Image (cartoon, rainbow, N blue to C red; front, side, top):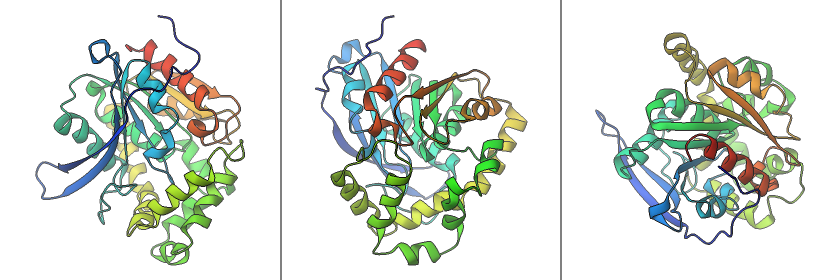
Length: 310
């Protein structure tokens, strides 16, 4: 199958929607906000692509690639996971297995999707993508993820106290990060956008304003920090899962920015938890791949999903 090397015109409609999800056996309800963009010709739909964002971002990070991927024939879904964006911000439930369960419930129970989907995750979204594919392999056609040291891997142990991931320790402190960052959300977020980028200005001032407003909402920074406070529990869960169930059988792509410090060793990390792994780096990009080189991101994702049933 031939693959376009440049994004089609992003003409498909993108809508913002909400779902109220209930997990079986509990009284818990979580509201998940998500972007949805069906292909121009639903009768010629190739499949579904699920885009999972990172921290400190929301589904807004995929603004440049949702339209092109949809125009290429895919139904594209980009949720704000629990605690982010316009989704609700409960006090608990920030293990990546819980977030993956939210997304699986959104797709299967709320949207009624029965086909296998292509999962693409970045940063925290990469951690969720791995968990989604490993726990729900029957619902996953392929998975592409990266730009994160997955808890339970050697890469995680190597990076978690390193200079590049200094915030892992800070975010894990109880209450203090919320106190220090309150009212200074924009300054704090800009530090990450600037430090981890290879292309200056790829995340524009307007984008920063969007993220700052979303993370200034009540509970948003606390929920963001709780993602990190759950890392050691994520580690235990991932190690237990691989030890009991083995490596994930879903074909996996290690997707990194070519200029990101996290690109080194990405393939080896995925091979710790996946049976079949390929490696790709998006040239000219640091950590924020979908913003720094959206055409490169589009090209690598499209090539990958078309190879695996798209």
